Length: 263
Image (cartoon, rainbow, N blue to C red):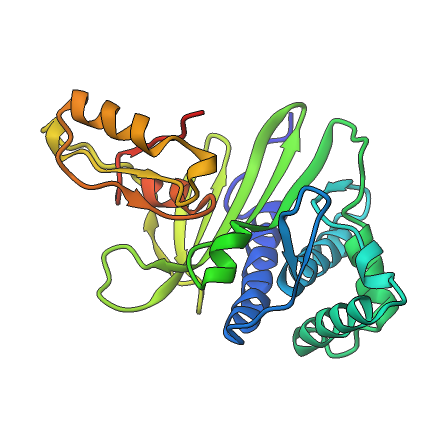
């Protein structure tokens, strides 16, 4: 298996991809009224989901043309001839063009569909263009999550959390976490990609001081069961509830000790 490190092209491109996607997502969220459609499972999909996927897939395809990408969305809803499809399509293209001024509508739709691979070989990328869409729609936490998988193992990962507070700083929001297998994980400020430091979990001596995080949405976990477990462990701190895989960044940064996700 190929070994990767923080100077590998895969790592650098992954960080750049999620950062650019996070820029688009921030722009859409700032409107406070992002257009959304419903998937068959009734989960919402926004301009930001499509735009994020388009940007990430475009960047990966331009550098690693032979790598399949398995992502969440396809362009079917954007190609619809009805008014909703046109409105959504125009919104996605507008946001992508803010960052890629020469992108055509066909380019954007093609980039989105490049994430539609279902079969994969030994090496492929997997992308969640917005994890935590409900949090995104509320103006809360969400993440852009990207990983390179080789021979069944995650070897490079990048996670952009645009609304996450910067660890150890009184002001500023937006964190990018990056990791390579066997090479540790690092945290960066989203705005300028300055390195905050290595991701290190905390090691409190007193179990009662443990902090745990869990999902906001009760359908993703059992809040009551988590509370019972916390009480039995002697944990006094209130849970930190936030959407998306941002919880992993919180634990990795030492801002919480436990991530509880229960059926």
